[in-house]
Image 1: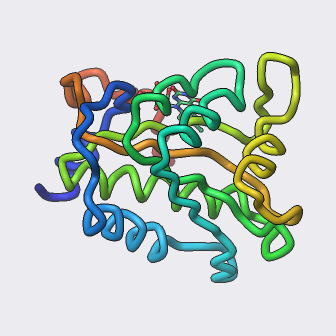
Image 2: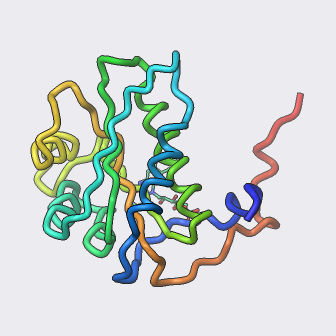
Length: 172
Ligand SMILES: Cc1cc2nc3c(=O)[nH]c(=O)nc-3n(C[C@H](O)[C@H](O)[C@H](O)COP(=O)(O)O)c2cc1C
């Protein structure tokens, strides 16, 4: 699969089979994240791999909506960042997250992003603080998102070339 096809095939997958993601695949995904670009080459990300069912279920409850798929995912990576290391940590963390998603697509795996930064649970408590507390992460770390990975239990159509918003591209 060339990169052009990977980009077209990547869709958010929120239903997963029970088939585990093996260690080698996971390491390939994390390798991609660790090769992603960062401002001033700060590389301040922290990737916390969670494969324990109970912890994944608890992570799903850290925000009021948009994280239920973690209850079905065999594994997820919490994308955190030592915010003291960079003023552009949000960008660095986001680029690493999406790089993992493209790598997962190439491996035939599905993935979905669950936003944590700026989100709250059903009672209005910070999702980020809840994730940090659950995983005992240091105070200086910020949490951008959680990316779930697994084998897709549903098939999603690849991106429709004919529906791209080319009108939003301005060439001057
Ligand atoms: C910054 C960002 C935050 C997102 N947050 C969530 C989320 O909290 N829950 C969720 O189910 N999907 C989330 N998504 C996935 C989007 O809903 C999805 O990418 C979008 O609907 C387009 O669909 P596609 O990924 O299949 O092309 C997020 C994606 C991005 C880039």
